[in-house]
Length: 224
Image (cartoon, rainbow, N blue to C red; front, side, top):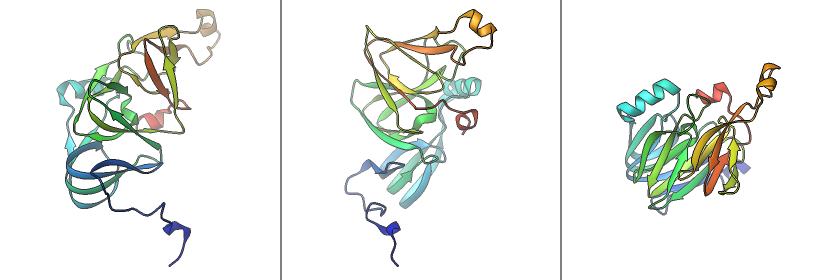
C-alpha cells in the first residue's frame, strides 16, 4: 500500500529517550516509565502497559474550579509504554521548567506534564471576580510542561518600563513573578453608549513575558 500518509514524518517511531517530545505540531508523545500527568480526555493513542487514573485537585482546588469554571481536570498515567496526547488539533509547545522557575498557565492551555513539576490552582492577584483569569495554574519545580494554543501564540516581553495589558480571554500564561491587576481602558461614557468590547484587561507588570493566543476564547471552547 502506498500513500503520502505513510511518509516518515507521519510515522510513529519507537522512543529513544524517556519523557516528553513533540510528535508533530499538533500532538505530544510521552515515553512513560513510572508516572506522568495529563488533562483528562487528551490521550489519543498508547502502546505498552499503561493505566489511566483520575487525579484529584484537592479540596481547595475543587472549590475554586466549582466557583469559577477554571481549573484543570487531570489524570495520572502510570506504567511503562508510550502515549500520545492532543486536544482539538491545537498547536503544542513544550516548555522546560528549571528549578527556581515558575510559570502561570490558564488551565485550558495545559496538555500534559512531568510528575516532577508541582501544580496548584492559584488566585490571580488583583483580578477580582472579572474575566477568565481569576484562578490559573501555577507550575514550579523542574521538568517539562506541554501547553496548547489555538493558532500561533504571541510572546510579549514585559519590563518595569513597559507593562502589558492582555484580554483575559486571550491570555495563555505568564511569568509567575509578574504582578497582576485589572485595568479599565474604556470610559464610562463609552460604556453607556454600548461599549467597545474591550472594557477591562489584565495588566502585567515587572520583568518577564506573557503569552497570548491570536483570538479570544469562545464560550464553547472555554467549556471544553
